[in-house]
Image (cartoon, rainbow, N blue to C red):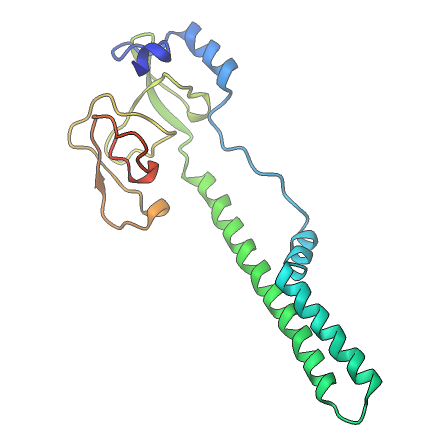
Length: 189
């Protein structure tokens, strides 16, 4: 069913002509980077979230209260502490976002540059960016998986998903299709 939908064959793969059509239709096999905001916009958004705005308002009100009654420094100290808390939590949130973004950028390095496909009935080494839906990808011991693939045959295949799931042991994969509605990262095929 999947092969017929993708106009592919389980033995001979795609033809060169079908590959060109699929490349035109689906585009190259590469991660599309999200639009990046300038660092200061991201930092500003962390400093002006809903809870942060409430704390800023409380800080400003404390400073106003101090300006009206300077007999005690309590309002001044409270206003300063609230402002420092907002700034520190904003900086910490920004740091966490920047770290997460760096990790996501690191996933680009996991994609292999080349892979082996069956095209026109013969095995060929191609750039992974030229992989399209319907290509038959040959995976061997130690191979990096170049794209989301569906297994059509395997001999006790196990994959290491530790970079995605944190699971330290290699997980077995099978050819049988998954049940409707199953989680993609939990899929066994």
